[in-house]
Image (cartoon, rainbow, N blue to C red; front, side, top):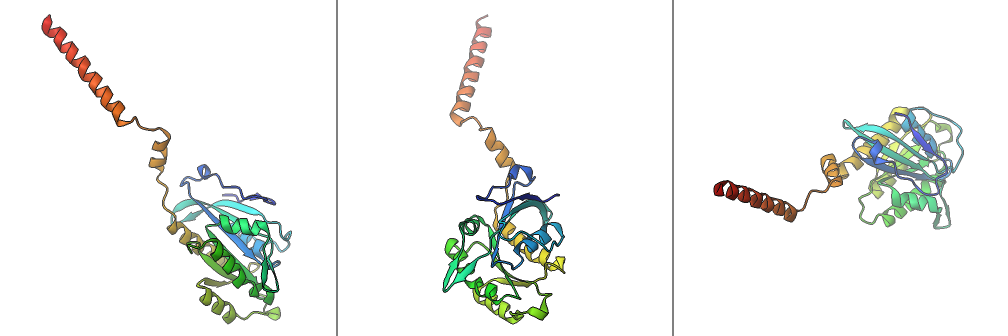
Length: 239
């Protein structure tokens, strides 16, 4: 199944559920600071490939179908422009805010080579929880670029401690060197979302397209049939 790519989304288009046999759509927003490797993570997960050079802040929407517990499911992953913190305020553009509102789940990404990208994770988490006050949207934290140990600024225990404090699952990955770790982080998240979503009843959906006659009409038909049958019986008797 090929990955579909839609460039520079000013609004987020929905994946046509009719193109997926199950009618299921999973929507994931990937957010974090600029240059942390969000696009590389998304493309690695969906295609297995790593491409080192991307246009930054493209805000691309990717979509394709994947297998989850034997079921074909449509998945949309919204890459987003990088966020920054000025003082104590998080500067998120409108696309990031729309992406959070739209998403079934959120991936918070920082780079172990950039302490500032780590520092904004708690701000981003707060923004997601403020948008989804019911806490039904799963959030995971992904530390990217773990292969770049020679320029590391954030230690593993720092990421794990923050994730524990925020109640999130924590992953350390290298989008450039290890596909399996990236795939596992996203796939486990997709399975969690899939369990939360109510299964689509295709029979019920199909039957809803052709409404059944209301019971008064059926009763009327039965009454007319009985009248016609009685009239026929009377005619035969009189003869």
